[in-house]
Length: 584
Image 1 (cartoon, rainbow, N blue to C red):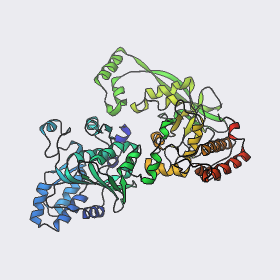
Image 2: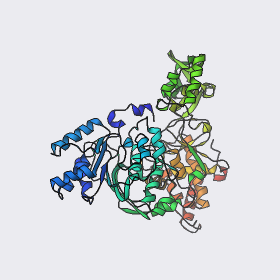
Image 3: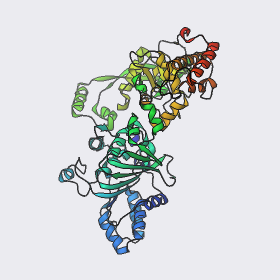
Image 4: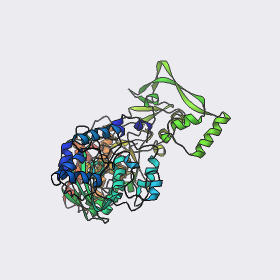
């Protein structure tokens, strides 16, 4: 976890988005609460769910009985001291007296379940796998995007980070769900307001698998609006059955487990119509997708190109600085490193060893550089343009990038890796990481890759025409529908999202050849200066090449007419596909 995340304002760091009381009341009304239920609210905030539960039970129990119930059956945790004080004040204002001792101000990840075994108690309030079934109902709004205590982060990852040999993302709401499911009784219910990222994103695949292996699952809209966040939320209700269901109820639809398992990300937003596209191969069978490099300080190394030139404001050089343990710990992940690593650095420090660092001095007058220049490479930053654009950015790349690599190597731990390095300079496809759809462009050879513009490259042995066939596919409405409804419905389009898209194996060979020719034609036009967007007729016509045809219909059907029409049209615009000028 980055230091920047740990330094955020308290509310964001804790992942706090308080539940409005009206929403809590609406959710509780939908639940059949029994006076015998043992209930936990693991992130109670100022008590919206707790007070909604008490109001609901108060209609059925006399005050004395209700108070006895709170002393024996109601549990809660709240990490924030100020929130806990606010909760206690409301509790007393209602005439309930002192807050029960089992409603605690503590970190839920350090909280010890009531029947936890001795081994867990000795393990500093962290537990390993053991029979912990205790609660009939767990309800609440767990933190989303919060910062997990760095002192226990790695330990929690060991306990909650893997289920069924699949990784569970180290995310507050994911770990809350895992721990809560561990302490829920068989037949018990869990009802959480949750980020809708749980539905599709690939990093939550392990969580979805774990939940659907042992729970009845129902996903509903949250009954009301939050004022504190624009994050899209859902209400997830689980019933622990310790067996796999055949269907999930997702936003009013019954979704078959078989359809979910047909998708590589185990999407909870798939349906039978979308599932049919995943019966063949995926784009990952022909492409490897990769993110690019995080430079760390773009203003130092990245330059905008204007009319084939750039302005260089800095003079670069190397210097030496002492290696010190204090400085290396400061740059390490969570400020921690292994004992062996610390000893090695201490030896460097005792010997007075030095390391090379990058220095930059501002020039009085920036240099004007005409491209191409041996000290600069074109840089692939994100853009909403499609098909092809001339490079708009360059990176200072003297000595094959040694200045940039040195800067990263001597920076914080998260800069040390060189994302996508093995693909630098290769021909491929690229798109913007943050976008409502794939804005795909042809990536010519020779560019250095930026992390904000993921790329995809042909695997060894795959014919080059597949690059253009798949590029055309990614620009269709059908591909966008599958991407945004099944693979990843957020605005992020990660490199692995691309690989998980279905390969359009249903397209007949004749239409495939025509689609390749059309895509090459569009690139040639874009290289000649023509601008395209998703509404351009030539781009929209790509949709016809990739319509679903499960049995490769003969050319006597619709595909024949589509192929003939586009062949005639393309002949008027460029030579036949066999005589296409090589795109390079």
